[in-house]
Image (cartoon, rainbow over all chains, first blue to last red; front, top):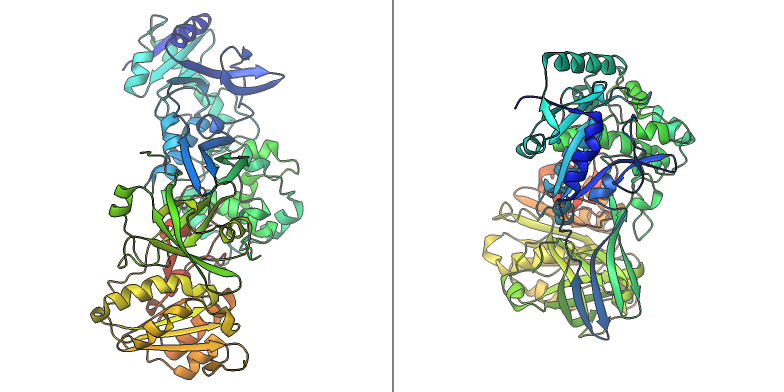
Length: 346
Length: 276
């Protein structure tokens, strides 16, 4: 399909017409914080380099009821939570956040059964991206997939070229969206403008590295992990701000004769994540836990899912209260190092 | 009913056996008749058991599908869910998500001499494979069971010892840590008893489960006896929640213990980071 353009002043009218058919979410500013929220919960703000939070809570809420039950004496009865049943469109999604969905899709579907509560939301959601013109200081998507030029999991993507947006469709759903009355075919000058904007954005980002190969020989015993352990507070903000982090806990909430089973976000950065009933903890200190986060994203994910578990959004870097920088950690690990001794070769 | 994989099936506790002072074996029957009749599983697989009002925890299936109609799980009292389970009476309703995980490669064990080496509650996952093999007795060579515990009172499955001993070509070797009045079997730790018994590794398979310290020395001693890493199997314990490879808790290297395990050969274990 040919590229389109839409005048900036027409975006509101276009989104309003979509909102008649489905829920529309967009980057909305509320109290100085930009998050993907339903339109109407604040002022839409598209001039940002990354919302404070990723899309994660729109697909796996921070706390999600899995089912409810009643019990009395010897008897118990289950009540299922009704599945989410409405179509949604999320507008203004950053390329890194859209790409993160591809990774989480793989995690939640590689082994049967699929995570149906996640896919119920995922399959009813349309993603319209907005590429970055001004990447933040912490961004490094160019090193983990180059999503500005290689968009993933977007139905359509927009680029700000001044007084209009340049729009491309990547799926049939996206094509249908861009056939709305507010769009018109892009001209040669629009294509030139988008190219210029992209090159400028890319020039602000680090050069592409070859993590996919380098990560397979990361040094298990790298001295960087004891160092990180000294620094890290174990607060977990890196995981909670991460668009690809997907680990959760399953817990119980019961009162009287009723209860519910729910899941909530959890992270390998917490000591209790792997602590077993009899007291043994396979990852007892922050040295093992900080290593787990880096190795899981950069090494284990390549081995298991054939893709990196990091999309370079930089949130963990800007959110960390003690300035731990995963990008710098990875750079350190990719310096030539002695062979791993951490594998049990007795 | 549901395609939500986190929703359990209801099951009724039909029988509770007190194995030791802190361990009980629960026999449960699925309430849904169709599910019950179609339910099957393989030795080595596990389940998530819900106690409504308290939570869900992971237990191996200690029974075998060759004895259909029910499932069994043995529970040592440790944390919230195990305590709540111990407080249940026969007839109580629980939730079960099963079967989960891989299994022992029992097809490849056919024709081999089997050495089951268990310690304490670690006998529970071995019992599933053991009774499966005894129910398909002609498929396997000799069956040898080394089972140890701290004291005679800490041995589980005592009611089945006679059945095991009296099966054809089957030997039961019991051991406890310290001398006790009336104890006529071996005294000593499982790894050293294994060295006394000196199993011949030729055409043999060793399957072990028990406390981490026991497993560590059993694996070492088996290698010393000439067992290759491909002849040794164990079943790993990791903290789990979802049981279906999603929640990330039991991740070791590129593997998830809940779906790639819990059964691993020693050869596979040696390729894993030392985080179990």
